[in-house]
Each structure stands twice: as structure tokens, then as C-alpha cells.
Image 1: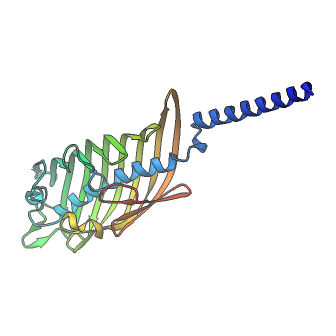
Image 2: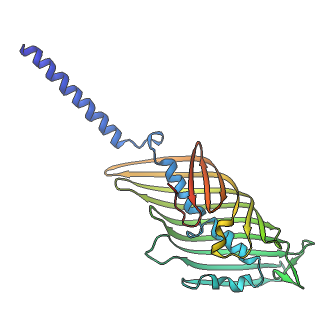
Image 3: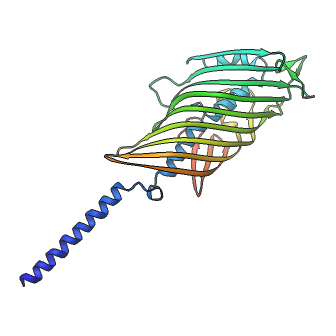
Length: 289
């Protein structure tokens, strides 16, 4: 009888040990395929990289939209009456190109979302014959095409769950239909940044690069914030990140590579990352649950 009780006790203790072992493994596991947040974290980074309020892709599209208007460069600061904004610009008559430097805040420091960004642009207006002209309107005729480059960019932004330090930014865009109410933008966009995402029990740091191909993006001319929801178009690209997981004393690193497909319209970005899909607000840079 005592022998039977001893066997039962041993079995119970072994079972408990196995349960504790499995629980410990589950708690400490940060295997890339077992981490359900990895694609969502990538989507949150993308949402911030795209959004208007965070100084993302949409922000630069709206600047370009403003430049496609009469006195667009001179009037750009009027669109930001309540936050810090500064612009300097010089024109090279030999190349027919403007060099533009912008510094701005989006929101108020300490609020969410918030962004502080600086950007260096080059801009060239071209007439119906493809010849450079100094301004959007010359001799009562508007430019037909605009060549627009983001030479460099840096800054930081914050959303509810994510803070980002932008390290590199470059874009090469061509605008057609520059004399229409909706301009069409095609080109490439590249960004490198470090995101920190915090939850109650884990910190994830994502050192990532983003490569985007912007195709037939339709943007209303004028650059007013109220027009953001009228932007529509298709973006494809690739997201690469070196991700660090910290949970208590646990620490691990992983690499993520995903092809991405993004459809923008009605103020939303439908983001496909691999086999998963997410919806983001292109104004705030937040995922929509």
C-alpha cells in the first residue's frame, strides 16, 4: 500500500514538474514563429512610417501637393499656425531646381501623436514641353510635371504604443497631371528608423528599413490637412527589421523580412504583411482594431 502511494506521489510530482517546465518555456520563448506580436509590431512601424501626423510618407505627399499651387512654397507655413514651422528655399537657375529645407512639429510636445521632423527637398517644375520653369505658374501657364526628391530626413515621432527615431530618408517622385485638381505621383521611398514598442510585460526594439514603390498615387492639389482622406493609390515594397525582445531578464534577437502590399483610400491604409492583414489610420499612424 505504501509502495503504491509512493508511486502515485512520484507521478504527481513528475506531472507538476512537467507543467512548470512547459510554462517556463512558454513564458521565455521569443521564437520568431511563436511570437504572435511580430507582424503586428511590423504593421505598427509601417503605420507610423506612412502617416501624416507622424511625418511619414503622407506628410511628404501633402508637402508636394502644396508645392503644386500658386505661391505654394510661400504659403506652406500658413497651414501650421499653432506649431513650430520653418522653411528656407533657394533656386538654382542653371539646373532649374529648388533646394528646400523644412523643420516642423506635428502636435504638441508631450501629446500623442507627436512628431518633430526636418526634411531636405529638391523640386523642379517643368512645362508642357518638359522644360524647367522657376515657379508653378509662369506666363499664366501651370507646370505639367514636377520632379521631387527627398534628399534626407531625420526626426522622431510618438504614437500610443510606439516611439521612433528616424535616421535616414530618401525619395524620388515624379508628378504628372500637375495642372489638374488631382496630381499623380510615382516613384520610390526609402526609410531607416529605430522603433521602441512597449507593453506591460515586454519591450521590442525594431531597427528597420523600409523600401516602397509608390504607384499611381492620386493626391488632391492644395496640401490642406482636410484633404488627406482623399488620397488613394497602391504601394508595394519590403520591410526588414532586426528585432530585439526584452522581457524581464530574457533577451533575444531576430530578423524579420516581409514583402508588403498597401492600398490607400478613404483615410485608411490596408497593409498586407506576408499572409497577414492590418488596417491603419493614415492621419494618426495608429492601427485600427
